[in-house]
Image (cartoon, rainbow, N blue to C red):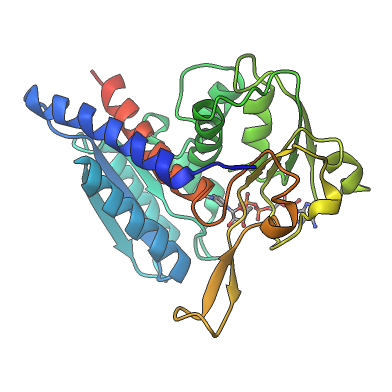
Length: 291
Ligand code: NAD
């Protein structure tokens, strides 16, 4: 069994980005600039946004964090988005999800200028992705594709089972894995909470991409020998013996499946770090498309 080391690969990608940024700056241009909008004080969101800002510093990007209070009105947030859309000094921005209940997420997503939508969530970019046109791929699926590519995993003709149909992971990765090319060319099955006898699909899978958010959902009895497992799940599980009071768990019972799998992503240190690296890559692309 080989561990797919997302931390290592994400660091390599960040180094590659830094070299490009140094060149941009040497040419007398400004460095790429990523902004993040955070509404409220959700613990996990604060952590994610914090590491996005730190990663910007690592690669030489400029970054701006726009913090708005939890009770910010939808209109106020839309105004801020409009400002970011029109700010020529900003190449891309993200609105950290989830948003408070009184804000309509769909309205916010539609308000982001697709040319600055480095999360790849806008319908224009999602449509371009589905049509195989150049665009910002959603960062987590993009990270999975990059891991498969860098580990030279052959996905052509393979049975790929994606668990979960969210707009940000499950559905887009199912589209990317069925596209022409490698990674891609897979025969994809998308299973979800309404799937009957989910095990009958996972047992036949050459590749399993799990994005449901249920700790230890997949165990050894559900997979076949030499399966390749990409575990996207990140769930905080209460653990008083840990200084933080919780531990992070993936969807896969790692110890149970490790002897059967040929490749596996650990949690943490697998898909998670790749998401940020690919967000930076999208921001770099956004800057280069503006030329
Ligand atoms: P979500 O929470 O929006 O949806 C979960 C999906 O799983 C749904 O489509 C649902 O149908 C399916 N599902 C739920 N229970 C199921 C069951 N018992 N059997 C089969 N299917 C079931 O999904 P999301 O936003 O894609 O998040 C999924 C997980 O991935 C979460 O743990 C999240 O924290 C994690 N995540 C990680 C990253 C990363 O960077 N690594 C990025 C995004 C999400």
